[in-house]
Image 1 (cartoon, rainbow, N blue to C red):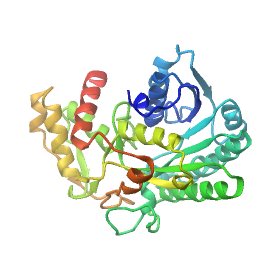
Image 2 (image 1 turned 30 degrees about the horizontal axis):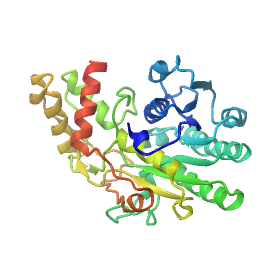
Image 3 (image 1 turned 90 degrees about the horizontal axis):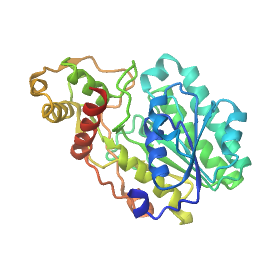
Length: 332
């Protein structure tokens, strides 16, 4: 088990906001398997009850139905926790373009509420989900943590504001914070449905249903796709690090390689066709580019390697094979 290898103590109680979501539920699972007590705070706006259903009978798991936009809910959740893994947010660039006010309420006001609650509860460390969208229009490649551009969407603005607030709270109140800039995370439990579904689960379900996936643009846009187990590892490493120089900063969470969308679809077809040979012959449709999309994304993970000992175990191919197995066996 990953956490056993990292020697993460089972005596700690961890609050996971957005614990019923894709990333949050995987963090819940890993920590419960390690013997930790886990508090999950979720309002089920995007989280799913089925994601946490297996945990409800576990005596170490506590579900608090609440909203990070309510300070009282945040303080109730923080009261008995040692650490916070803050995953709650309204994701998606298109959603933020369609409804910037709600994205700001959740991602900025909710984030501030959690920081205040964590400060008041004297939480040991506040690790939060940042985003690669913060790099905005920066042309530098690979993306290095201290070189960013101007945000290209309301969502990107909210995630950058999170970093600014975390920095100010660290300096002003002495809270230990670490931000994790996620790069296109994928894997088990990622929702394939809805208008704002991520590209991998969306394409996966379309292919399993023998539908042609629609790629935004000509397929040349590329991403540093990052398997969920790499993300779980980084969260735990962020909780474990005891070097003050490694705290109160942000880290890229990625594999460090990029894959364009054309290659991605071919890999999905290849792996899914082992379950259903007809998938190999499905044609791909190429449509218009999507507003607010960054053309290319590639992370440098040197800082995480150096300061946190991060060594991602899953590349795009091994991650996709594992993810496709989960989708076929759970959603087909």
